[in-house]
Image 1 (cartoon, rainbow, N blue to C red):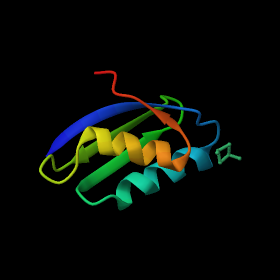
Image 2 (image 1 turned 30 degrees about the vertical axis):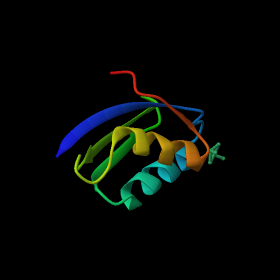
Image 3 (image 1 turned 30 degrees about the horizontal axis):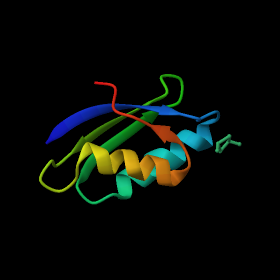
Length: 71
Ligand code: 9UX
């Protein structure tokens, strides 16, 4: 497993962060996802053989928020 922290933009209330968190948790290959509204970031533990950071970003964007890899 690998863990990545992804900055997420556009989240303004707790329902936003719940939405993003649920979408990530549903994604195959994701073992754990935690989205912090105040930190504006998603911390995701995933199986690199099953899913890439790029596809985690695509999932966040599909949910309607902005995401990019900053580290
Ligand atoms: Mo809260 Mo977020 O009313 O898209 S769910 S702002």
